[in-house]
Length: 306
Length: 326
Image 1: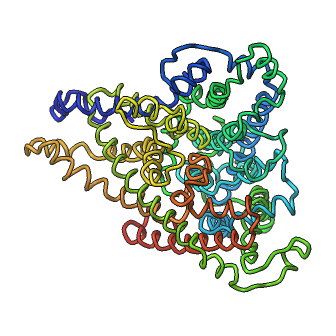
Image 2: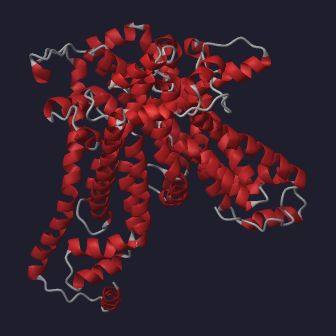
């Protein structure tokens, strides 16, 4: 999004309008960031202060108890991070490989039946069998219920990404280049790996980014397929924590010890819940500046006809 | 890399094919064979993940019991659909899905275009970039995270709105999660909050693409900013607007499951105004175990959805062939 005109061209809006527009955007920016800040601040608030004053942006009393408790009993969190990382890394790479390996052949104008193959993928964007048969395929026939692969396999093929990549191959890789390499005696696989892929890094980065975000943010597959505690991803852990704070403290001794010690001290469930949210949101917010920069670029790559 | 390119160019110049004829065909079959082989894993996956379930739509016409299996269970014709449409649920979920999506489409469109135009006019490019980044942030958050953020704002006991905003205004706390009538207003706001950043970027890209000469000419003619907006920017944006909107209308029968399930915290009291087809399909199957109803509703959604996609694509095609989906 580069500037279209010199900042102070004769056609620039007046100073007053500019100030007004800035005001609107400052307000909206605060609106976008505020809930996140609130959650972060609440996670650092003393439980008694929350119970007395509710969630406040500036806590009346700071406390690290929520994080101390979470770290003292961090087994589930560490495990969930492992699950999410594994799913995201493996899912992103596998999906990227499959997408490129399908998009390239259907981008080749000389491949017989390429339109048929494109339609085969494309049809899945128009019609689907619905939740029930889909669920039964994975649980009754593939027996993937409670498996970590149930969090990866269903999202591997994304028709829209295939279309984006195919369009990129078609518009940026000259057919003459491929033909020439063929005449030089290079095999298809070699052409694909040595010529096509290195020329396609922008679209590969874009799709990788889409995939990473999709896998990291997914909770739906967990909701459908996962019922044991071993395969709970970060997002699903957050979901469960929202339903029931006890879920986090599988090791209840920590909280019991706390209660016994103080007498009146109780499990700071409000603060813990928000601390869990902060731990879950963390990676996305940290990666955000990087993500959004390339995401915006990727959107313009994807803007070409699918 | 370099030598290959050089060779390639040379070979491309010497085009007249020198490749041997007879053996060539077999070799070509072998080389395309590699391309087909590359597609194989994806094809297998799509058959499993998409086509097998498509045949599964026949479940909607059966009375499934697990002893007899799917194929062995007795056929009941349209019985499941009769039951579904005999309930008020069918009407409620259809109404909710369509009205919410219509509201989402309208608010996203209006706010995103306004923001895109305003971003483009800001004098400071640095600030414009900063604002764009800030409003894109919610788009990257998962529905679960959004449910936490909304809960922090609307929670009954401790939520920021009840405890700070309403208190300051002297209004009694509202039990948002027990107040179904509030959500037809809350959900479009939350949806816009999450997605407007994305749509603004799309529209901003289109605005930046408008030829600068139009504006220069308008300036010479003494056209005001408002006039430029209504006579240049909006008309030139129209194709993008129409196509983006029609594509969304094609998906109007599919709801954002995360928004209606996570953000409402799956609260029973809110079902009358927040139950949509997707949440209905999920709950009747995963929670109540009613395979018949769930698959009937799923097929109903897929069938009507298919008609809508074809319909909207037909209109897009009429307007601009290049933007049609197929």
